[in-house]
Length: 496
Image (tube, rainbow, N blue to C red; front, side, top):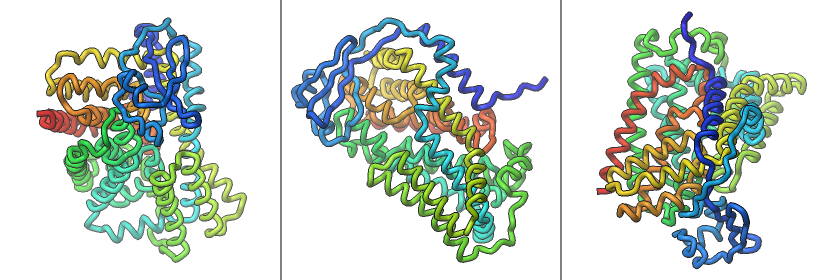
């Protein structure tokens, strides 16, 4: 019997089982944490057995060995509780049992309700767009425009999404792009892997080499006690270098597939994917009428408004989801879709992304198991103590690998930053390197492992495109190794 690689859901359940086992093997422990209360202008220090309030002053921070300007708290730059250095203590074990394991995906779905609703509403919007025929018309028009220059699509999509990643952390929002852009790549005679790579890797490289991303660069720099502009030049160089390597890698694969479709890693799924994305029913004769142009414009404006809202108006998932819901309704009115037909198409579109939503929830359940088992801080404690006595070159690369490993258990960039930076960044002072290097190792470590991290977004993306994790690993591992070696070299150079 031929071995079949397990589905995304099964992979995540296996990981949840592994993490459940870890809670029996890894000692429970926790760092004290500190949170700022804007209403009373005080700090709340949470310890093992009590909670106390402290004055929100620079002296308080210095007494706790936290080298962060008080202004970072009072102006809202640091809005989550941070770990306090040198306060790790072991706790009574909290091993997670079979009941906790079974309940974890349910808790994960509840905790991830915001992103799950975003995914479902986007699915509904796409269902409405498919009903109007606007996608067919747009794809046919684009295929004619790009004929003979399809490679421009690869460069353009990857670069634009990377720009979103490096500026405002475009990641979860890319789930909307897969059903929209994959048919465009298929119409350009590439395979779905090319489209997946352009979108997912564009986001990954952008967030990995974040420059002004408030959810990683800025919050991590603030938590490390430095300005986010410190080290910006190195990150810009890394962004250009890694993006160039990635685009060349995708282009090489895409050209092979275009010349010989049998070279595709997913050639056996060609007909299935054409059906999935409607290429077998694509109406190439449909004209891009003024009404369809307006519908595509409204659809595009949803993303523009979302980006502006996240970047300038402090929007998050509720507001983003509302934008796509309003967009669907407006498009329905423009296309004069009957109310019953609209609801049916919307629900059908949402249902097609339901499996993706569940994957996001199950992945969040893995993190909940770690939090409830009290082993997250223990892993951080071990990571911070194993680097003592290292020279700065070795230290920097060990921290890169450490952050990659930690991201398996803590895939949230902002959560990782506030938890680890106050504890890890002081180690830079000991080995005589700038704290911006710790911020870099944090970003690059998370970003590199993000390419293959099953507790991140890759399994959700693969579920949309119906590509197995094994095929993705076969595609991406050579690039992963190239980028890892490049990053290690650049980090080593930066500290000497």
